[in-house]
Amino acid sequence: MSSAAPQRPNGLALFILPSVLLFALFFFLPIGLMAVMSVLTGNPVVAPKVAFTTRHYARMFDDPYYLEVIWTTIRIGLVTTLVALAIGYPLAHWMARIKSRTGHALLLMAVLAPMLTGIVVRTFAWMTLLSDKGVINQTLISLGLISQPLKLMYTETGIVVGLVHIYVPFMVLTLTGVIGRIDEQLEQAAENLGASPLRAFIEVTLPLSLPGILAGSLLVFALAISAYVTPILLGGFQIMTLPILIYQQISANFNVGFAAALGIVLLMISLLLVIAYNRALGLVSGQRELQ
Amino acid sequence: MSTSTSHSPSLAPDRAAAPVRTAVPRHYGRYIYLAINTAILVFLLAPIAVVVVFALNPTPFIQFPPVGVSLRWFEKFFASRDFMQALGFSLEVAVLTTVSATVLGASAALALARGNLPGTRLIVATMLSPLMLPAILTGLALFQTYVLLDVGRPTWGLVAGHTLVTLPYVVRTTLAVLHNFDTRLEEAAQNLGASPLRTFFEVTLPLIKPGVLAGAIFAFIVSFDQFPVSLFLVSPGNETLPVTLFNYLKFDLDGTIGAASVVSIVLAFVVVIGLDRTVGLRSYVKL
Image 1 (spheres, chains in turn green, yellow):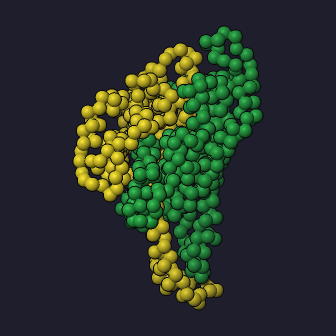
Image 2 (cartoon, rainbow over the protein chains, first blue to last red):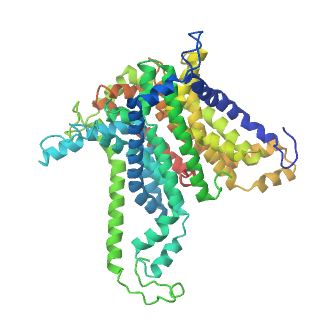
Image 3 (cartoon, each protein chain N blue to C red):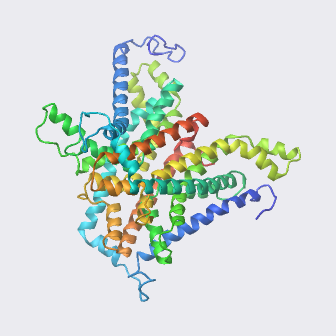
Protein backbone atom coordinates (compact mmCIF):
# COMPACT_ATOMS: atom_id res chain seq x y z
CA MET A 1 0.00 0.00 0.00
CA SER A 2 2.70 2.48 1.01
CA SER A 3 5.16 1.49 -1.70
CA ALA A 4 7.49 4.25 -2.81
CA ALA A 5 7.24 3.65 -6.57
CA PRO A 6 6.26 6.90 -8.35
CA GLN A 7 2.81 5.92 -9.67
CA ARG A 8 1.85 3.74 -6.71
CA PRO A 9 -0.18 5.13 -3.82
CA ASN A 10 2.24 6.59 -1.29
CA GLY A 11 2.04 7.07 2.47
CA LEU A 12 -0.19 10.12 2.14
CA ALA A 13 -2.85 7.93 0.52
CA LEU A 14 -3.56 6.50 4.00
CA PHE A 15 -5.03 9.86 5.03
CA ILE A 16 -8.11 8.97 2.96
CA LEU A 17 -9.01 6.14 5.35
CA PRO A 18 -10.87 8.11 8.08
CA SER A 19 -13.16 9.64 5.46
CA VAL A 20 -13.65 6.26 3.77
CA LEU A 21 -14.66 4.86 7.16
CA LEU A 22 -17.08 7.76 7.74
CA PHE A 23 -18.70 7.25 4.34
CA ALA A 24 -18.84 3.47 4.76
CA LEU A 25 -20.47 3.58 8.21
CA PHE A 26 -22.65 6.68 7.97
CA PHE A 27 -23.48 6.88 4.28
CA PHE A 28 -23.24 3.63 2.33
CA LEU A 29 -24.34 1.35 5.18
CA PRO A 30 -27.42 3.48 6.05
CA ILE A 31 -28.44 3.86 2.41
CA GLY A 32 -27.92 0.14 1.87
CA LEU A 33 -30.07 -0.57 4.93
CA MET A 34 -32.71 1.79 3.58
CA ALA A 35 -32.73 -0.16 0.30
CA VAL A 36 -33.11 -3.41 2.27
CA MET A 37 -35.88 -1.98 4.46
CA SER A 38 -37.77 -0.91 1.35
CA VAL A 39 -38.27 -4.56 0.35
CA LEU A 40 -38.98 -6.05 3.80
CA THR A 41 -42.36 -6.60 5.42
CA GLY A 42 -41.24 -5.19 8.75
CA ASN A 43 -38.44 -4.20 11.09
CA PRO A 44 -36.11 -7.24 11.41
CA VAL A 45 -35.03 -6.17 14.91
CA VAL A 46 -38.52 -5.95 16.42
CA ALA A 47 -40.27 -8.63 14.40
CA PRO A 48 -38.21 -11.79 13.92
CA LYS A 49 -40.31 -13.06 10.99
CA VAL A 50 -39.83 -10.66 8.13
CA ALA A 51 -40.05 -11.55 4.49
CA PHE A 52 -39.17 -10.09 1.14
CA THR A 53 -41.90 -7.97 -0.40
CA THR A 54 -42.41 -5.53 -3.22
CA ARG A 55 -45.67 -4.19 -1.78
CA HIS A 56 -44.15 -0.84 -0.73
CA TYR A 57 -43.22 -0.10 -4.32
CA ALA A 58 -46.47 -1.57 -5.65
CA ARG A 59 -48.44 0.68 -3.29
CA MET A 60 -46.60 3.72 -4.61
CA PHE A 61 -47.12 2.94 -8.27
CA ASP A 62 -50.68 1.57 -8.01
CA ASP A 63 -52.20 4.41 -6.04
CA PRO A 64 -52.77 7.55 -8.13
CA TYR A 65 -52.39 9.63 -4.94
CA TYR A 66 -48.70 8.78 -4.63
CA LEU A 67 -48.08 9.30 -8.33
CA GLU A 68 -49.75 12.69 -7.94
CA VAL A 69 -47.38 13.49 -5.05
CA ILE A 70 -44.36 12.55 -7.16
CA TRP A 71 -45.68 14.64 -10.06
CA THR A 72 -46.34 17.66 -7.77
CA THR A 73 -42.76 17.39 -6.48
CA ILE A 74 -41.34 17.29 -9.99
CA ARG A 75 -43.63 20.10 -11.19
CA ILE A 76 -42.57 22.40 -8.32
CA GLY A 77 -38.95 21.47 -9.04
CA LEU A 78 -39.28 22.29 -12.73
CA VAL A 79 -40.98 25.66 -12.24
CA THR A 80 -38.46 26.59 -9.50
CA THR A 81 -35.59 25.71 -11.84
CA LEU A 82 -36.94 27.77 -14.74
CA VAL A 83 -37.59 30.84 -12.58
CA ALA A 84 -34.21 30.48 -10.85
CA LEU A 85 -32.55 30.36 -14.26
CA ALA A 86 -34.41 33.45 -15.49
CA ILE A 87 -33.49 35.36 -12.34
CA GLY A 88 -30.03 33.92 -11.87
CA TYR A 89 -28.67 34.43 -15.36
CA PRO A 90 -28.65 38.27 -15.48
CA LEU A 91 -27.06 38.47 -12.03
CA ALA A 92 -24.45 35.84 -12.90
CA HIS A 93 -23.66 37.70 -16.13
CA TRP A 94 -23.19 40.94 -14.22
CA MET A 95 -20.99 39.26 -11.64
CA ALA A 96 -18.84 37.63 -14.30
CA ARG A 97 -18.41 40.83 -16.31
CA ILE A 98 -18.19 43.54 -13.65
CA LYS A 99 -14.82 45.27 -13.76
CA SER A 100 -14.51 46.78 -10.29
CA ARG A 101 -13.20 44.44 -7.60
CA THR A 102 -15.31 46.13 -4.92
CA GLY A 103 -18.40 45.76 -7.09
CA HIS A 104 -17.67 42.08 -7.51
CA ALA A 105 -17.13 41.61 -3.78
CA LEU A 106 -20.41 43.38 -2.99
CA LEU A 107 -22.35 41.27 -5.48
CA LEU A 108 -20.76 38.12 -4.09
CA MET A 109 -21.78 39.19 -0.58
CA ALA A 110 -25.34 39.82 -1.78
CA VAL A 111 -25.51 36.33 -3.26
CA LEU A 112 -23.84 34.59 -0.34
CA ALA A 113 -25.75 36.41 2.42
CA PRO A 114 -29.06 34.64 1.72
CA MET A 115 -27.20 31.38 1.17
CA LEU A 116 -25.72 31.57 4.63
CA THR A 117 -29.01 32.51 6.29
CA GLY A 118 -30.52 29.14 7.25
CA ILE A 119 -33.43 27.64 5.32
CA VAL A 120 -35.84 27.95 8.25
CA VAL A 121 -35.07 31.65 8.67
CA ARG A 122 -35.51 32.39 4.97
CA THR A 123 -38.78 30.48 4.85
CA PHE A 124 -39.94 32.48 7.86
CA ALA A 125 -39.02 35.65 5.98
CA TRP A 126 -41.29 34.63 3.12
CA MET A 127 -44.09 33.81 5.56
CA THR A 128 -43.94 37.39 6.88
CA LEU A 129 -44.08 38.64 3.29
CA LEU A 130 -46.68 36.35 1.75
CA SER A 131 -49.22 35.58 4.49
CA ASP A 132 -52.72 37.10 4.43
CA LYS A 133 -51.63 39.73 6.94
CA GLY A 134 -48.12 39.82 5.54
CA VAL A 135 -46.12 42.76 4.28
CA ILE A 136 -47.21 42.45 0.65
CA ASN A 137 -50.94 42.18 1.38
CA GLN A 138 -50.90 44.92 4.05
CA THR A 139 -49.10 47.26 1.68
CA LEU A 140 -51.41 46.57 -1.25
CA ILE A 141 -54.50 46.99 0.95
CA SER A 142 -53.28 50.25 2.51
CA LEU A 143 -52.57 51.57 -0.99
CA GLY A 144 -56.15 50.71 -1.88
CA LEU A 145 -55.10 48.44 -4.74
CA ILE A 146 -56.94 45.42 -3.36
CA SER A 147 -59.67 44.98 -0.76
CA GLN A 148 -59.24 41.27 -0.01
CA PRO A 149 -55.79 39.83 0.72
CA LEU A 150 -54.32 37.94 -2.20
CA LYS A 151 -53.86 34.26 -1.53
CA LEU A 152 -50.09 34.09 -1.83
CA MET A 153 -49.32 31.58 0.88
CA TYR A 154 -50.56 27.99 0.97
CA THR A 155 -50.24 27.84 -2.82
CA GLU A 156 -47.72 26.28 -5.15
CA THR A 157 -46.77 29.77 -6.28
CA GLY A 158 -45.81 30.68 -2.72
CA ILE A 159 -43.70 27.53 -2.43
CA VAL A 160 -41.97 28.27 -5.74
CA VAL A 161 -41.18 31.86 -4.67
CA GLY A 162 -39.59 30.63 -1.43
CA LEU A 163 -37.66 27.85 -3.17
CA VAL A 164 -36.37 30.18 -5.89
CA HIS A 165 -35.08 32.58 -3.24
CA ILE A 166 -33.33 29.74 -1.42
CA TYR A 167 -31.74 28.06 -4.44
CA VAL A 168 -31.05 30.92 -6.87
CA PRO A 169 -27.58 31.56 -5.31
CA PHE A 170 -26.53 28.05 -6.41
CA MET A 171 -27.62 28.90 -9.95
CA VAL A 172 -25.77 32.25 -9.86
CA LEU A 173 -22.52 30.74 -8.58
CA THR A 174 -22.56 27.92 -11.14
CA LEU A 175 -23.32 30.29 -14.02
CA THR A 176 -20.82 32.96 -12.94
CA GLY A 177 -17.98 30.45 -13.15
CA VAL A 178 -19.02 29.38 -16.64
CA ILE A 179 -19.73 32.86 -18.03
CA GLY A 180 -16.47 34.12 -16.54
CA ARG A 181 -14.56 31.61 -18.62
CA ILE A 182 -16.09 32.82 -21.90
CA ASP A 183 -13.65 35.20 -23.54
CA GLU A 184 -15.19 38.67 -23.51
CA GLN A 185 -13.37 39.50 -26.74
CA LEU A 186 -15.71 37.12 -28.56
CA GLU A 187 -18.67 39.36 -27.66
CA GLN A 188 -16.67 42.47 -28.56
CA ALA A 189 -15.72 40.94 -31.90
CA ALA A 190 -19.39 40.25 -32.64
CA GLU A 191 -20.27 43.83 -31.72
CA ASN A 192 -17.44 45.18 -33.82
CA LEU A 193 -18.85 43.22 -36.71
CA GLY A 194 -22.09 45.13 -36.28
CA ALA A 195 -24.15 42.95 -33.93
CA SER A 196 -26.14 44.74 -31.23
CA PRO A 197 -25.13 43.84 -27.65
CA LEU A 198 -28.34 41.82 -27.33
CA ARG A 199 -27.65 39.92 -30.54
CA ALA A 200 -24.01 39.37 -29.56
CA PHE A 201 -25.26 37.96 -26.29
CA ILE A 202 -27.87 35.67 -27.89
CA GLU A 203 -25.56 34.36 -30.61
CA VAL A 204 -22.24 34.20 -28.76
CA THR A 205 -22.46 34.21 -24.97
CA LEU A 206 -25.70 32.30 -24.50
CA PRO A 207 -24.73 29.24 -26.60
CA LEU A 208 -21.28 29.12 -24.98
CA SER A 209 -22.84 29.15 -21.51
CA LEU A 210 -25.25 26.28 -22.24
CA PRO A 211 -23.27 23.71 -20.20
CA GLY A 212 -23.45 26.09 -17.22
CA ILE A 213 -27.19 26.54 -17.72
CA LEU A 214 -27.55 22.78 -17.76
CA ALA A 215 -25.38 22.25 -14.66
CA GLY A 216 -27.05 25.03 -12.68
CA SER A 217 -30.52 23.82 -13.62
CA LEU A 218 -29.78 20.24 -12.63
CA LEU A 219 -28.35 21.41 -9.30
CA VAL A 220 -31.34 23.62 -8.49
CA PHE A 221 -33.79 20.93 -9.58
CA ALA A 222 -32.07 18.31 -7.41
CA LEU A 223 -32.16 20.66 -4.40
CA ALA A 224 -35.75 21.80 -5.01
CA ILE A 225 -37.27 18.32 -5.21
CA SER A 226 -35.64 17.36 -1.90
CA ALA A 227 -36.75 20.49 -0.02
CA TYR A 228 -38.84 19.91 3.09
CA VAL A 229 -39.09 23.06 5.20
CA THR A 230 -40.24 25.49 2.51
CA PRO A 231 -42.99 23.33 0.97
CA ILE A 232 -44.38 22.41 4.37
CA LEU A 233 -44.42 25.93 5.86
CA LEU A 234 -45.35 27.92 2.75
CA GLY A 235 -47.72 25.17 1.61
CA GLY A 236 -49.32 25.06 5.04
CA PHE A 237 -49.48 21.25 5.10
CA GLN A 238 -51.91 21.44 2.18
CA ILE A 239 -49.55 20.62 -0.66
CA MET A 240 -47.91 17.23 -0.44
CA THR A 241 -44.44 16.63 -1.86
CA LEU A 242 -42.22 13.56 -1.71
CA PRO A 243 -39.99 14.74 1.20
CA ILE A 244 -43.05 15.76 3.24
CA LEU A 245 -44.65 12.38 2.56
CA ILE A 246 -41.45 10.59 3.60
CA TYR A 247 -41.26 12.42 6.92
CA GLN A 248 -44.98 11.90 7.52
CA GLN A 249 -44.58 8.15 7.01
CA ILE A 250 -41.92 8.13 9.73
CA SER A 251 -43.37 10.58 12.25
CA ALA A 252 -47.11 9.92 11.97
CA ASN A 253 -47.48 6.43 10.52
CA PHE A 254 -44.14 4.91 11.51
CA ASN A 255 -44.24 3.00 8.24
CA VAL A 256 -40.49 2.59 7.89
CA GLY A 257 -40.67 0.27 4.90
CA PHE A 258 -42.85 2.57 2.83
CA ALA A 259 -40.75 5.61 3.83
CA ALA A 260 -37.66 3.70 2.70
CA ALA A 261 -39.26 2.85 -0.65
CA LEU A 262 -40.21 6.51 -1.18
CA GLY A 263 -36.66 7.45 -0.18
CA ILE A 264 -35.17 5.06 -2.72
CA VAL A 265 -37.32 6.58 -5.49
CA LEU A 266 -36.18 10.10 -4.52
CA LEU A 267 -32.59 8.85 -4.33
CA MET A 268 -32.76 7.34 -7.82
CA ILE A 269 -34.11 10.58 -9.31
CA SER A 270 -31.37 12.55 -7.52
CA LEU A 271 -28.58 10.15 -8.52
CA LEU A 272 -29.51 10.50 -12.18
CA LEU A 273 -29.44 14.28 -11.75
CA VAL A 274 -26.04 14.21 -9.99
CA ILE A 275 -24.51 12.12 -12.77
CA ALA A 276 -25.96 14.45 -15.41
CA TYR A 277 -24.69 17.47 -13.43
CA ASN A 278 -21.15 16.09 -13.31
CA ARG A 279 -21.30 15.38 -17.05
CA ALA A 280 -22.47 18.93 -17.73
CA LEU A 281 -19.72 20.44 -15.60
CA GLY A 282 -17.21 18.14 -17.27
CA LEU A 283 -18.22 19.74 -20.57
CA VAL A 284 -17.33 23.16 -19.18
CA SER A 285 -14.12 22.58 -17.34
CA GLY A 286 -12.70 19.83 -19.48
CA GLN A 287 -12.04 17.86 -16.28
CA ARG A 288 -10.02 20.74 -14.90
CA GLU A 289 -11.75 21.07 -11.56
CA LEU A 290 -11.70 17.52 -10.31
CA GLN A 291 -8.20 16.78 -11.53
CA MET B 1 -15.80 50.80 -24.22
CA SER B 2 -19.36 51.99 -24.06
CA THR B 3 -19.02 54.16 -27.15
CA SER B 4 -19.37 52.57 -30.53
CA THR B 5 -16.47 54.56 -31.95
CA SER B 6 -13.91 52.17 -30.53
CA HIS B 7 -14.24 49.81 -33.49
CA SER B 8 -11.07 48.00 -34.16
CA PRO B 9 -10.63 48.05 -37.93
CA SER B 10 -8.40 45.00 -37.95
CA LEU B 11 -11.17 42.93 -36.40
CA ALA B 12 -13.79 43.97 -38.89
CA PRO B 13 -12.14 44.59 -42.23
CA ASP B 14 -15.26 43.97 -44.36
CA ARG B 15 -17.72 45.91 -42.28
CA ALA B 16 -15.60 48.74 -41.01
CA ALA B 17 -18.38 51.04 -42.10
CA ALA B 18 -21.03 49.34 -39.96
CA PRO B 19 -23.60 51.99 -39.05
CA VAL B 20 -23.51 53.56 -35.60
CA ARG B 21 -27.26 52.89 -35.31
CA THR B 22 -26.84 51.02 -32.02
CA ALA B 23 -25.56 54.00 -30.02
CA VAL B 24 -28.91 54.93 -28.47
CA PRO B 25 -30.40 51.46 -27.84
CA ARG B 26 -27.07 50.49 -26.38
CA HIS B 27 -27.59 53.02 -23.61
CA TYR B 28 -31.17 51.95 -22.98
CA GLY B 29 -30.00 48.37 -22.96
CA ARG B 30 -27.49 49.20 -20.27
CA TYR B 31 -30.20 50.79 -18.10
CA ILE B 32 -32.57 47.85 -18.58
CA TYR B 33 -29.73 45.48 -17.68
CA LEU B 34 -28.97 47.39 -14.47
CA ALA B 35 -32.66 47.74 -13.59
CA ILE B 36 -33.28 44.01 -13.95
CA ASN B 37 -30.25 43.20 -11.85
CA THR B 38 -31.21 45.71 -9.16
CA ALA B 39 -34.67 44.13 -8.97
CA ILE B 40 -33.04 40.71 -8.55
CA LEU B 41 -30.80 42.01 -5.76
CA VAL B 42 -33.87 43.46 -4.01
CA PHE B 43 -35.59 40.07 -4.31
CA LEU B 44 -32.53 38.40 -2.76
CA LEU B 45 -31.99 40.82 0.10
CA ALA B 46 -35.43 42.26 0.95
CA PRO B 47 -36.65 39.18 2.84
CA ILE B 48 -33.63 39.39 5.13
CA ALA B 49 -34.31 43.08 5.73
CA VAL B 50 -37.96 42.33 6.50
CA VAL B 51 -36.94 39.81 9.15
CA VAL B 52 -34.79 42.43 10.84
CA VAL B 53 -37.62 44.99 10.74
CA PHE B 54 -40.05 42.43 12.13
CA ALA B 55 -37.67 41.54 14.96
CA LEU B 56 -37.38 45.19 16.03
CA ASN B 57 -41.08 46.01 15.65
CA PRO B 58 -42.82 45.91 19.06
CA THR B 59 -46.19 44.54 17.87
CA PRO B 60 -46.78 40.81 18.41
CA PHE B 61 -48.03 40.37 14.85
CA ILE B 62 -46.73 41.40 11.47
CA GLN B 63 -47.33 45.11 11.01
CA PHE B 64 -46.18 47.07 8.03
CA PRO B 65 -45.02 49.80 8.03
CA PRO B 66 -43.43 49.17 11.44
CA VAL B 67 -44.65 51.25 14.40
CA GLY B 68 -41.46 51.57 16.40
CA VAL B 69 -38.24 50.03 17.57
CA SER B 70 -37.95 47.77 20.57
CA LEU B 71 -35.73 45.01 21.81
CA ARG B 72 -38.52 43.12 23.59
CA TRP B 73 -38.34 40.13 21.21
CA PHE B 74 -34.62 39.85 21.76
CA GLU B 75 -35.22 39.92 25.51
CA LYS B 76 -37.86 37.22 25.13
CA PHE B 77 -35.54 35.14 22.94
CA PHE B 78 -32.60 35.35 25.31
CA ALA B 79 -34.86 34.69 28.31
CA SER B 80 -36.46 31.61 26.74
CA ARG B 81 -35.13 28.36 28.14
CA ASP B 82 -36.05 26.40 25.02
CA PHE B 83 -34.33 28.76 22.63
CA MET B 84 -31.22 29.12 24.77
CA GLN B 85 -30.93 25.37 25.18
CA ALA B 86 -31.34 24.96 21.41
CA LEU B 87 -28.79 27.70 20.68
CA GLY B 88 -26.28 26.07 23.03
CA PHE B 89 -26.85 22.63 21.53
CA SER B 90 -26.56 23.99 17.99
CA LEU B 91 -23.25 25.65 18.82
CA GLU B 92 -21.99 22.46 20.48
CA VAL B 93 -22.91 20.34 17.45
CA ALA B 94 -21.48 22.94 15.03
CA VAL B 95 -18.14 23.05 16.88
CA LEU B 96 -17.85 19.25 17.06
CA THR B 97 -18.86 18.97 13.40
CA THR B 98 -16.38 21.64 12.32
CA VAL B 99 -13.53 19.86 14.06
CA SER B 100 -14.31 16.42 12.66
CA ALA B 101 -15.18 17.64 9.15
CA THR B 102 -12.02 19.75 9.00
CA VAL B 103 -9.69 16.99 10.17
CA LEU B 104 -11.28 14.32 7.98
CA GLY B 105 -11.82 16.55 4.95
CA ALA B 106 -8.36 18.12 4.92
CA SER B 107 -6.67 14.72 5.31
CA ALA B 108 -8.82 13.27 2.54
CA ALA B 109 -7.99 16.19 0.23
CA LEU B 110 -4.29 15.70 0.96
CA ALA B 111 -4.50 12.01 0.15
CA LEU B 112 -6.44 12.76 -3.05
CA ALA B 113 -4.03 15.43 -4.27
CA ARG B 114 -0.73 13.87 -3.21
CA GLY B 115 -1.32 10.19 -2.51
CA ASN B 116 -1.24 8.88 -6.10
CA LEU B 117 -4.55 7.15 -5.43
CA PRO B 118 -6.21 5.32 -8.30
CA GLY B 119 -9.74 6.46 -9.24
CA THR B 120 -9.33 9.94 -7.76
CA ARG B 121 -12.14 11.39 -9.87
CA LEU B 122 -14.63 8.84 -8.64
CA ILE B 123 -13.59 9.29 -5.00
CA VAL B 124 -13.90 13.08 -5.26
CA ALA B 125 -17.33 12.77 -6.89
CA THR B 126 -18.45 10.41 -4.10
CA MET B 127 -17.14 12.71 -1.38
CA LEU B 128 -18.91 15.70 -2.88
CA SER B 129 -22.16 13.81 -3.45
CA PRO B 130 -23.75 14.63 -0.06
CA LEU B 131 -23.97 18.21 -1.35
CA MET B 132 -26.44 17.21 -4.05
CA LEU B 133 -28.14 14.12 -2.71
CA PRO B 134 -31.20 15.02 -0.65
CA ALA B 135 -30.05 15.69 2.91
CA ILE B 136 -33.44 14.50 4.10
CA LEU B 137 -32.50 11.03 2.81
CA THR B 138 -29.21 11.14 4.70
CA GLY B 139 -31.30 11.93 7.78
CA LEU B 140 -33.83 9.18 7.06
CA ALA B 141 -31.17 6.55 6.33
CA LEU B 142 -29.19 7.39 9.48
CA PHE B 143 -32.38 7.41 11.55
CA GLN B 144 -33.31 3.93 10.29
CA THR B 145 -29.80 2.67 10.94
CA TYR B 146 -29.76 3.99 14.50
CA VAL B 147 -33.18 2.42 15.11
CA LEU B 148 -32.04 -0.92 13.69
CA LEU B 149 -28.83 -0.87 15.72
CA ASP B 150 -30.82 0.30 18.74
CA VAL B 151 -28.41 3.08 19.69
CA GLY B 152 -31.08 5.73 20.36
CA ARG B 153 -30.44 9.28 19.18
CA PRO B 154 -27.00 10.14 20.55
CA THR B 155 -25.21 13.45 19.95
CA TRP B 156 -22.38 11.64 18.15
CA GLY B 157 -24.95 10.27 15.72
CA LEU B 158 -26.11 13.78 14.89
CA VAL B 159 -22.51 15.03 14.61
CA ALA B 160 -21.71 12.14 12.24
CA GLY B 161 -24.63 13.14 10.02
CA HIS B 162 -23.55 16.79 10.06
CA THR B 163 -19.94 15.80 9.32
CA LEU B 164 -21.12 13.90 6.27
CA VAL B 165 -22.90 16.93 4.79
CA THR B 166 -20.17 19.46 5.69
CA LEU B 167 -17.12 17.36 4.71
CA PRO B 168 -17.57 18.19 0.98
CA TYR B 169 -16.95 21.90 1.66
CA VAL B 170 -13.63 21.20 3.37
CA VAL B 171 -12.57 18.70 0.70
CA ARG B 172 -13.37 21.19 -2.05
CA THR B 173 -11.67 24.26 -0.57
CA THR B 174 -8.58 22.27 0.45
CA LEU B 175 -8.32 20.55 -2.94
CA ALA B 176 -8.59 23.96 -4.64
CA VAL B 177 -5.55 25.20 -2.72
CA LEU B 178 -3.60 21.97 -3.18
CA HIS B 179 -4.10 22.10 -6.93
CA ASN B 180 -2.99 25.70 -7.08
CA PHE B 181 0.37 25.42 -5.42
CA ASP B 182 3.57 24.16 -6.84
CA THR B 183 4.51 20.63 -5.80
CA ARG B 184 8.12 21.53 -6.46
CA LEU B 185 8.13 23.42 -3.16
CA GLU B 186 7.63 20.14 -1.35
CA GLU B 187 10.17 18.38 -3.55
CA ALA B 188 12.68 21.14 -2.86
CA ALA B 189 12.23 20.73 0.90
CA GLN B 190 12.76 17.00 0.61
CA ASN B 191 15.83 17.45 -1.62
CA LEU B 192 17.25 19.74 1.02
CA GLY B 193 16.99 16.89 3.48
CA ALA B 194 13.64 17.41 5.20
CA SER B 195 11.78 14.24 6.16
CA PRO B 196 8.31 13.79 4.60
CA LEU B 197 6.79 14.54 8.02
CA ARG B 198 8.78 17.74 8.39
CA THR B 199 7.97 18.75 4.81
CA PHE B 200 4.30 18.29 5.63
CA PHE B 201 4.35 20.42 8.77
CA GLU B 202 6.69 23.14 7.52
CA VAL B 203 5.75 23.46 3.85
CA THR B 204 2.44 21.81 2.96
CA LEU B 205 0.40 22.70 6.03
CA PRO B 206 1.12 26.45 6.04
CA LEU B 207 0.36 26.59 2.32
CA ILE B 208 -3.01 24.84 2.51
CA LYS B 209 -4.10 26.62 5.70
CA PRO B 210 -6.31 29.24 3.98
CA GLY B 211 -8.22 26.53 2.10
CA VAL B 212 -8.69 24.44 5.23
CA LEU B 213 -9.79 27.51 7.18
CA ALA B 214 -12.33 28.51 4.54
CA GLY B 215 -13.70 24.96 4.53
CA ALA B 216 -13.91 24.96 8.32
CA ILE B 217 -15.91 28.20 8.32
CA PHE B 218 -18.31 26.85 5.69
CA ALA B 219 -18.64 23.65 7.73
CA PHE B 220 -19.53 25.66 10.84
CA ILE B 221 -22.22 27.73 9.12
CA VAL B 222 -23.71 24.78 7.25
CA SER B 223 -23.86 22.73 10.43
CA PHE B 224 -25.33 25.61 12.45
CA ASP B 225 -28.09 26.08 9.84
CA GLN B 226 -28.53 22.40 9.00
CA PHE B 227 -32.14 21.26 9.15
CA PRO B 228 -33.11 18.09 7.21
CA VAL B 229 -30.52 15.78 8.79
CA SER B 230 -31.21 17.18 12.26
CA LEU B 231 -34.97 16.78 11.84
CA PHE B 232 -34.64 12.99 11.98
CA LEU B 233 -31.79 12.75 14.47
CA VAL B 234 -32.61 15.15 17.31
CA SER B 235 -34.45 13.99 20.40
CA PRO B 236 -37.10 15.99 22.26
CA GLY B 237 -35.43 18.33 24.76
CA ASN B 238 -32.20 18.14 22.78
CA GLU B 239 -33.04 20.01 19.62
CA THR B 240 -30.93 22.25 17.42
CA LEU B 241 -31.97 25.87 16.89
CA PRO B 242 -33.34 25.38 13.33
CA VAL B 243 -35.54 22.50 14.54
CA THR B 244 -36.82 24.54 17.50
CA LEU B 245 -37.51 27.48 15.18
CA PHE B 246 -39.32 25.20 12.76
CA ASN B 247 -41.53 23.71 15.48
CA TYR B 248 -42.30 27.19 16.82
CA LEU B 249 -43.10 28.47 13.31
CA LYS B 250 -45.71 25.78 12.75
CA PHE B 251 -47.91 27.41 15.38
CA ASP B 252 -46.72 30.92 16.05
CA LEU B 253 -45.47 33.86 14.04
CA ASP B 254 -44.39 36.41 16.65
CA GLY B 255 -41.29 38.57 16.90
CA THR B 256 -39.33 36.02 18.93
CA ILE B 257 -38.76 34.09 15.71
CA GLY B 258 -37.59 37.33 14.12
CA ALA B 259 -35.13 37.90 16.96
CA ALA B 260 -33.86 34.33 16.74
CA SER B 261 -33.47 34.76 12.97
CA VAL B 262 -31.55 38.00 13.40
CA VAL B 263 -29.18 36.31 15.83
CA SER B 264 -28.37 33.61 13.29
CA ILE B 265 -28.17 36.11 10.41
CA VAL B 266 -25.71 38.27 12.39
CA LEU B 267 -23.65 35.19 13.16
CA ALA B 268 -23.52 34.28 9.45
CA PHE B 269 -22.59 37.83 8.43
CA VAL B 270 -19.81 38.05 10.99
CA VAL B 271 -18.44 34.77 9.75
CA VAL B 272 -18.67 35.73 6.05
CA ILE B 273 -16.99 39.07 6.60
CA GLY B 274 -14.34 37.35 8.67
CA LEU B 275 -13.87 34.85 5.87
CA ASP B 276 -13.48 37.59 3.30
CA ARG B 277 -11.02 39.51 5.48
CA THR B 278 -8.86 36.52 6.31
CA VAL B 279 -8.72 34.41 3.18
CA GLY B 280 -10.79 36.11 0.50
CA LEU B 281 -14.02 34.58 -0.76
CA ARG B 282 -13.57 34.63 -4.46
CA SER B 283 -11.47 31.54 -5.00
CA TYR B 284 -13.49 29.31 -2.71
CA VAL B 285 -17.02 29.57 -3.96
CA LYS B 286 -16.69 27.63 -7.18
CA LEU B 287 -19.62 25.32 -7.64
